[in-house]
Image 1: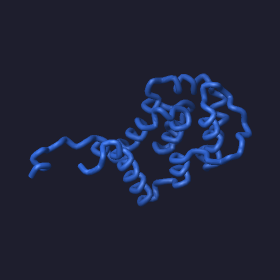
Image 2 (image 1 turned 135 degrees about the vertical axis):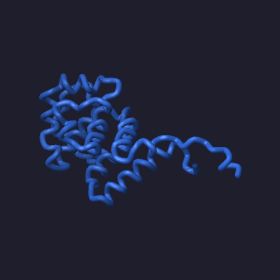
Image 3 (image 1 turned 45 degrees about the vertical axis):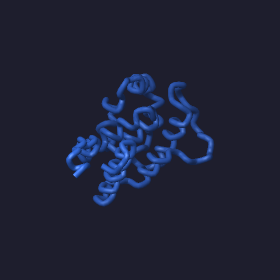
Length: 153
């Protein structure tokens, strides 16, 4: 009851990632990327293939390839399947839909957050809610009902 409503999701996300870390189920490099993005000052070596991808999104996508084997070839997948990615990008709720090119099956739920962050930063809050529901249950994203007898007792 003491946490402001606007901070509850952030607290639940932090709690979820800390539990995952305790279970050795969290890639800290990917968490750092999710929180900060590509902080490099280097220019992107590969030209952005489509206008609908933001400049920061493409910069982040090129950085993903450096994060490990799971991300190898991600920029090629995007470039080679632009129309499929565009359809996913244009959806009202892409975080609720399967990702193109089999990424939903290949990547874990946290890694899928990184993809949403690249393409649709406006949908990251909803993707975080889905992530927490998947890992912990919906109890951790719902506001508790007010019980005035407990408050004034």
